[in-house]
Image 1 (tube, helix red, strand yellow):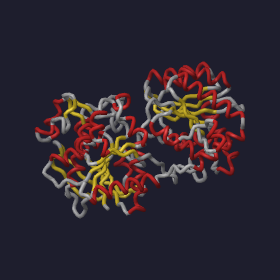
Image 2 (spheres, one colour):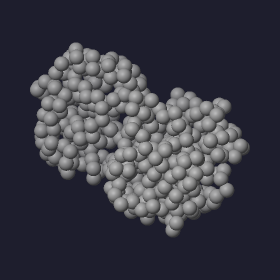
Image 3 (cartoon, one colour):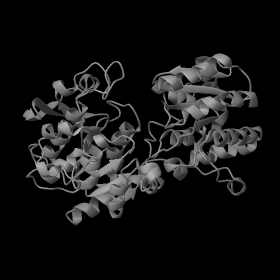
Image 4 (cartoon, one colour):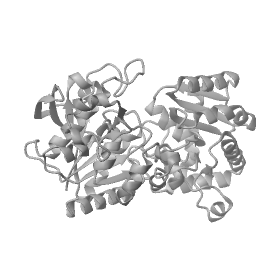
Length: 480
């Protein structure tokens, strides 16, 4: 089976979040099931710099008003189709924002162009290759099934994955003519969304199947609390909605072979984590003592519950814990966390920004990782924590609920606990979870058993890839 995947970011070429990890790992995980994937991605500067010896496969003289070329290249074990369109993607900022952190004002056109290119490839414009199915990811490529529906091209089966429904690609109605869709596409059955143009909304209406990145999140987005205004649209497609939990690339995230950490180890050699712990202490300027190190590797946003963490940081320190925080995001939240570090030197350390090697070292050396998200479609950080024996302390929501077994009395008795869940997702709820963690940490035999149980968890893409392959096959076999 041939599949065209369309995504705005894919690891290892370009990454701002978990979407990139999924879009990079899933094609590789699908190969054992007979699925050949080619992934269409924008030709950002970082992408163009990384690829070697690309082959020109397709040219557009007028892709929503600009020239573009589709290049084919192998990189990191993935077959890429790179949309080289300098007018859209050759910019000094990030994939979505400029150097000042503001959204590019023409993001609608940049990602509509990506979607239209995907639809054209789906229709057979790439010489010698036509997919059997198209898989689009998030709002940035959600117009692929829209163009496939409204353009006079053969309509293949399509899948749209919702990685985070909070990001919807909603723009004013004035952009609609620039999309070059027929007038009747601006309707409730198409892209019209409360008078605006909704990229994700259009994809939800037109894709043949919808997936989310965990079963719990699939249920949550049917409710007003988590549906972000789209719960009615999703409810109307409930029979086509599938919750498939994400996995991780367990070749990259493997403490026994990870070249990024200071000392490799396994469940049988957990004492070797101490070398990584020392590296964390040095990097964050923490005290050398036996108190637990709780880490955070996250976007510093309200969604991720970072305001809750800032609110209880002093209490965590007073309990005897230490905090190592790596991330960037909301300026006010960054400021609150840096202020906590200033008040508690040696007990709280903060590093602003993205540091992939340090994120590996933190998982390999810290005792637990805190993930107090108000909503979390899946989350990968807690899966890395399981793999590395860094016990996840998580809010009971979305994929966090699906992947972590809470250390309640029954789970501890059965020796199946892998972390700590808490609810409600409030400062009080988080503080109670931290008290439980501190209590459990005092019993090193129980803590070690939980670490080993977590490291045994199957967090790979194996079972999830099997589910995706089955979904693809069902859509192709019935002609969507």
